Amino acid sequence: MPLDSRTLGVTKYQCFCAMMAALGSVNFGWNIGVINVPGDVISNCVTGEKHFNGPFPSCIPTDSTVWGIAVGCFALGALIGTIAGNPISDKYGRKF
Figure 1: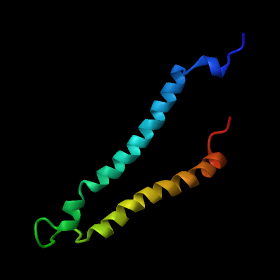
Figure 2: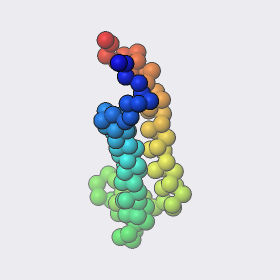
Figure 3: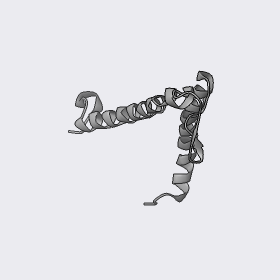
């Protein structure tokens, strides 16, 4: 008797694949949120005037629009990387 997908139901493997796909989305969202955590410290100069500890300043005075654009660039970079990654991996990736 052949297996019919209409009567088979949801398999454990399908549940596993759906959970792994959902975890990928959670990971992407988490990383975007982690970028926003140090935003106040980096952009608002909590200590007052910016001072230099070595070659880099302790804070970068920016407004929320510039900080939002900087964070959004990470998402755009991920989009460009996923679009460019597929043809590159097809051309140079492991062949079976």
